[in-house]
Image 1 (cartoon, helix red, strand yellow):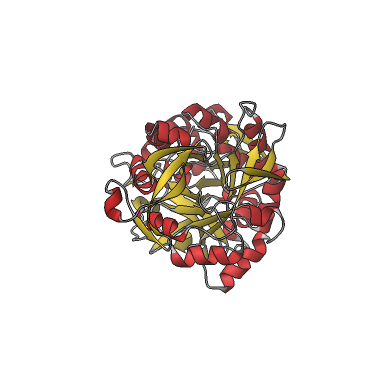
Image 2 (image 1 turned 120 degrees about the vertical axis):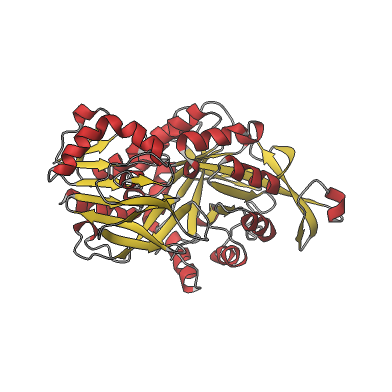
Amino acid sequence: MKVAIVDYGMGNIKSVYNALKYLGAKPIVASAPSKLNAEKVIIPGVGAFGNGIKNLVPFIPKIDAALASDTPLLGICLGLQMLFEGSEESPGVKGLAAIDGKVVKIPTKLKLPHIGWNRLEIKNKTCPLFDDVDDGYAYFVHSYHPLPKEDVVAATTHYGCEITAGVWKNNIFGTQFHPEKSGATGLRILKNFLEL
Amino acid sequence: MFCRRIIPCLDCDLAVPGGRVVKGIEFKQIKYAGIPWRLAKKYYEEGADEIVFLDITASHERRGTMVDVLEKTSEEVFVPLTVGGGIHTIDDARKVFNAGADKVAVNTAAIKNPRLVNQLAKYFGSQACVVAIDAKSRLVPSPKKAKDKIVVRTPRGFCWYECSIYGGRKFTSVDAIKWALEVERRGAGEILLTSMDKDGTVEGYDIPLTKAVSERLSIPVIASGGCGNPKHMYEVFRKTQASAALAASIFHYEIHSIEKVKKYLANKGIEIRL
């Protein structure tokens, strides 16, 4: 099974690649849009929303095609945020708008960025991404999180307020945390994605 | 439930192929502890929340060895990996990120060129930029005697803290608390705060230092230096706002496993990932 990681120059592609390889998959690092022909697509990423979209532009036609088909797509952290309409982090920059809603600064009194391990609360038990991941801990690194206008929140966590941790809309999946850095829980989530 | 982190630290001598983990005592004597990637994997399996590799190689023969260590480790270890030591430029940082590191920690290079912190934060994000501070207490008779420093009251008397560079071999007269505040403004995502007075002593973390820094900053502070048993971790989490506790020797010599330490802390009511 072919799974492509979109390499648009933001963040540690290698960690995602290593985790998928460890799980027995043969990931393709798609450093050019032409390499983005796969049965599954992962958009990873760390960094600012505006830069992310700027770098992602050449890949957008292929990603749109995947979004419109049944191709399962997983957005991780910034990769998830870019699936929304826009972000408070980079006003005026348009997101992919595959999910209705905006990315907002985490309304917490606690330290930001939210860096570290936090407990997942699975809100949609039917979401295949979170099979057997009840109450697991995941590794988060972010100051913003998406607020969907649709009923797509599959998992949350708490950090002085409720944070969107996972979303699911048809063939689109997303995690605000980094499954590739979340130990056994994260590997389980990636395995679930590979087995869709 | 946001968790405090337990971070094993591997002090690596990279002058030999594959590297070797060693542990210094009060920044001086050296003992052998194992092979970097093997220890990292063992700690990951025992529940380490993150792993720090510190390059303590004195010579220049290390080039490339840290890359090998990271490539090997990141194939099988799925928690954040931080690299410190030997990072002087954006290019040095890029090499270790490409090899599988998630964060870099800078000390000497940042003191000599504070703009490096801004650059690292800009290119790789604040989350990837850790500033390591090696702090040594300097006693003063009263706060008035050190007007340009931030003076802290400790059981030993009033003191300020001086930043040290080159692995504890040189002092800078830079105030460690002020420096921590400055690098936060410059975009650092975390502070790795090592007490030079406590490092290697196994007497416990430097509570006044850790408290002083963690209360003033809004970014996470990793307490380091002096951990000899799980009680010391409990103490630093109870008495300070440290986000993480780093330790080396208590894990290296199989005195305490990470799993047992985490269970102990969780039983004492500290939020911990189990």
